[in-house]
Length: 169
Image (cartoon, rainbow, N blue to C red):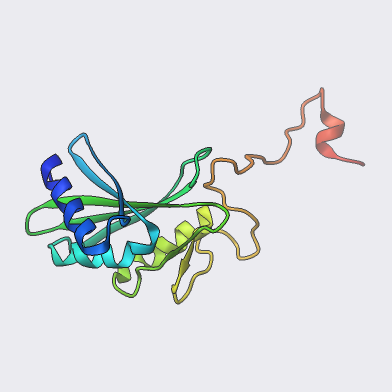
C-alpha cells in the first residue's frame, strides 16, 4: 500500500496531470490509500495509474451513500503486482444522472462488474458495449442494492391476518 505520504504524492501527480479539480479527496485509513476523483476523469486517471505500475484492476464495486448526495459510488481496486501495492480510486454520481464512462475498453475485466453495478445500483456506464442486467431479469424494476429499495415479499398468513395475507377468496 502506498503510505500516507506516497498517497499524497500520487494525488499531487494526478492533480498536475489532470487539473486541480480531478482529485477531490485522499484518505489513508487502516493502511489503505484511497483517492476520490471527479467522475469525468476516470479513464485518464486509471490510465495514468497503469503507467505507474498499477496494471491490474482487481475489482469494481458499487456503493450507495444514502442519504448523502452524490449518492452512488463506484470503487476501483488497482494492484501493482511488482511492488505488491494497492490503491482504491473512487467516484460518486448523483441519482439524477447516475452516469460514468465505462473503463471496459481499457480494462476488459470490468465487463461483468460494470454490468452488476448497473443492475444492482442503476449506474449507467457510457460506452459499455453490452450494458444490460446480469443478475435480475431484464424486465425487473428497480435496483435491489440501493439502500432505499423496499424490502418486501409475500405476507405471511397468521391467524390474526389470514384473510388479508391470502387475499380475496
